Each structure stands twice: as structure tokens, then as C-alpha cells.
Amino acid sequence: MARNGRFVRAQITRAGMVLAAVAGLAAAGLPVLPAGANGVGTVYVANEGSGSVSVIEHVGNTVLVTVPVGPAPRGVAVTPDGRIAFVANSGNGTVSAIDRDYYQVSNTTRVGKAPEAVVAPADATFSMVAEGPGSEIVTIDAVGARVKAVQVPGKPIALVANRSGSRAYVALEGNSNVYPVDDGDRVGAPIPMGNPVVAMALTSDGGTLYAVVPETNSLAIVETGSGKIAASVPVGLTPLGLTIAPDGRIFVSNSISNDVTVVDPASRKAVATIAVGKRPVGIAIGPDGAFGYVANNQDNTVSVIDMARLEQSKIVNVGSRPIAIAVAPVQMVPATRPAGPAPQAQGSKPPSGAVVGGASEAVSRGTGASGPSVLPKGMPNTGDGSVWSGPDPLTYLPYAGAGIGFGLVLALVRRRVARTIPTRD
Image (cartoon, rainbow, N blue to C red):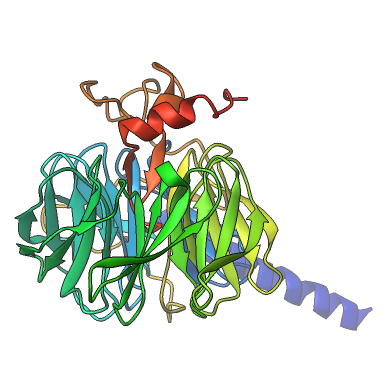
């Protein structure tokens, strides 16, 4: 009995210490991670409808924390060291920087009117943002400050860059060309694609550009040296996103057929199809190649793909209308949990609070809770990031840019798919 009594007292003492630690975190205004969380928050999901980013840990594939950002986030990218996730907020023209050690916004920078995509080159200390209405590619530094910009001949909707960031490729809305951008300030000769492109991915050596073409339900394979299309691979219905796995296979998310097509780079043929959730758009794969992640825009979930078995192994509930996904290139665990709020860059102010342990509708949605989040041309932006009200949003289907950025589908695709898209449940 004495031994059992000592055991019980020890457990009570430990429980008290845990409760005290949790209370300390809460008092400091820091997110309290759920029991069993391992701190490896490597997957970032931009929720366009709820103005938030869901952070998923890579081992158990559960949501660690939901971070409020700006309205209508459509793009997300993680810096090479894994410490900062940049989020393109199309609703207010800003980029939010989420600090990995605090799971809070540490800096917010205005880059234009409606940024659609953001990329973080693997070997660079800067990132690049596709700014739609301003027809610009904006370069930002390690904390998100604007460094330089270059004009492009239209509204950029998808962006990808090589490892050094010395060359990027941008796709423009309604434009059947892809444009190279060198050193962030020079636009090169266009690469003819035949039809508009809505998402791209680039091999690590920069030699091959993959681009999805919704109009032809295909994946275009471009040799960047010649600027020529080397092959076109049939995929599913209305592909809107893609990513390259560590082993070189290409994974294409098909928004109407609700599946992912796996393409072998050697044979340049589709070798598998994976069923996922409703209207898959953004897609990314972990650095170890064990899991893939697909943002299902219509049912507010992320499908986790078992890469060995090529099947959906889990469904994770996230925020409203998830649209973009990025996976940190490295897995890191903070040495210690911070004792205070994230340090703020000069003049920045993060959104208040963070929602922990799965999706939540409690995050701030801006000014009001109505109005379309994907806006047709000419409609004022209320900035609330709300969804599925007002004009039929199915007419304005959003799309992915290399898993990291989105905008409005070209008018021809809108007309083509309107007849095939079921009404919202």
C-alpha cells in the first residue's frame, strides 16, 4: 500500500507539473499543443475560406495548430531551413510569415493587391511572390520585406523557381505561354504551351518543367533548354495541381474526377490513379517520400497518401476551403518551447490567437461572414474569406500553382467544366 501510495502521489505531482506548464503557455498567449504532439509541424495548409493555415505534424499526420493569417490565403511556401512559412493572402495584398518556433505570424508585409502564389527556392535566402492585379513577380527577403519586382505581361497565377532562384517560370491567366524570369528582374522569351497552364513543377536540376493544362486534361513536359514541349500525358479531369516526389514521379491532382494521377518520368505515362476527396487542388509530398498530402477544397479535408501503397491512408479535417499545401524541406523540433510571443518585425502585427488541435471555425474571418471568396472580375473584395454564397462559386473554380498558389480559372475552362461540376451538397 505504501508503495502504491508513493506511486499515486508521484503521478499527481507529475500531473500538477504538466498542468502548471500548460497554464504557463496559455498565460503567455502561446498555442498549447495537444497531448502526444511531437512538435514536428512540417505540413502547412492554406485555408482560403477561413483565413488560416493548418499545421500538420508529419509523423502522426494530425493537426497541431491552426494559425490565423490574412483573408483568402491562396499560396504557401516554407523556407529551406524550415523556420518560416510564407503565406500569400489574396484578400488584402499581404504576405504573412509564420514563425516555426512559435506557430504565430511574426511579420506581415504588403506586396500588392492580391498575391496568388509564393515560392521559396531551396538554395536561396529569398522568396518570390506572384502578385496578380499588379502583374508583378515580387522578391521578398528572409523576413518578408519587399526587395524588388518585375512586371510580367499579364496576371500571374502560377509560379515555380529553380533551386537558386536565378530562374523562375510564371504562368499568366488566360495566356497560352509560360514566361521565364531571370534573377527576379528580367522576363525572357515566352515558351508556347498551346493552352493556358494553371500549375507547374520543376525538377531539381531545372532541366524539365511539368505543367498541367486543364483544357486538355493533360500534363505537359517541357525541356527547359530548348523551350519545347517534349511530351503530353493524359491525366484526370481538370487537373489543377501537381508536385514531384523525391523519387521523381509526378503526382497530379484532378479536381473534377476527384483523384490523383501518378506519372512515371521515364516512360512519360500514367501508372496509377489514387482516389481522394472532393475537388482536390493543392498537393505536396514529404521530404522522406513516405506521405503525400492533397487539399480537398470542397469537403475541407486533406487526404494523406501512403506513398508506398499509392492509396489514401487517412483524412485530416482542416479549415474552410483548403487550397494550397507546402511541406517543410527539413524536419526540426524546437530545442525549447518559447517563453513569450513571437518577436515582431518593425511595424508588423499578427492576427490574434491561434486555434489548436484540428480545424476550427473560431478563427477570425475578417469583416463579416458572407460573400464569395473566389471573386469574379469587377466584384469588390469584402476581405472576409467566406465561401459558397453570393454568385455561384462553381463558375469561378479556383486552381493550384505547383501546390503553392491559386487564382481564377480561365474563362474557357470555366465554361467547359460548368456543365460537369455537381451542385454543392
